[in-house]
Length: 414
Image (cartoon, rainbow, N blue to C red):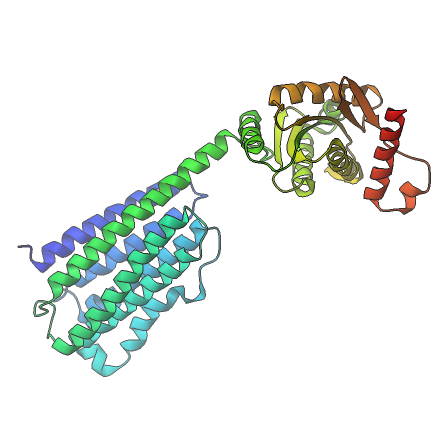
């Protein structure tokens, strides 16, 4: 049978090891700060219990009041870690467990009586578990199944803490060795700790795998999909859509080489990033947007008819032409040529759409750039970039675009 100090030593060693591993992971990936907060939580827990284990060897104030305050602070660190893992701020009550301990110890009868101190500590840990369960329950990371499992473990630990607090007050032991239910308390703590760590480790592993998959499918400069990501998104899109057709918009930034030569590659990178940001803000939800190479981008989206795709393309083209991009001491404008290909959902293949869109893009560039061209069967139809009638100057931009598209459709029928 393990004595109390040996059990404490094993527990401290385990939590201290977790702390070192998590902080080491954070040092390797500083942007993933939740690892730092989790590591600090385990470090705080280990340090606090280490001070408790030195009872009678150091002043009581340090081994009791300070030690338990540090130990309970681990809940605050863990709550912050969970919130950062979800990309948000921690709840306002994240400091409550150590503050509750501090406030209770201001009462003389709590400060001098072991049973009351132990009950307060159990209540404070229960509060910490409830806050962590609440934080996980309101998060979006991992799956809802794992979040519910983790929250359930912590709620059960919170309930057991309240029960143990009540039993300790009833039994009124004079010190920890005299506590007859300490074995049950330790067993519940170990089972809950191991279960929570296993579930949380699974969540962290899943998040890391998802991050790796995202990096493998994403262009690092613009944050848009790369060719692989675009291909995967196309397969998912065509496999589940209620619209009859799919469109591919192929964008090519006009005279991009001249921008690089004149203003430098840093400005060129800024142009690429600004264009990607613009398209992401304008394209409909569910659109797959990617960078296919150099100054060329592509968007895949489901549509009811080709005119829908042309309207979206023209909106992006006009918005890009109006945008001013910093280029050293001046600001420059960049235009874009767009080729569009549309196919029925049953017949659509990414390779064929790319070929047809590339053919349309070639036509748009050949006719002066800064315009949109659409494949229409074996023909390529170019949307006029401007009109001289008052509609373009006075009406809403979308009405003007639709007017131009209607004129193309009319001339095509004749």
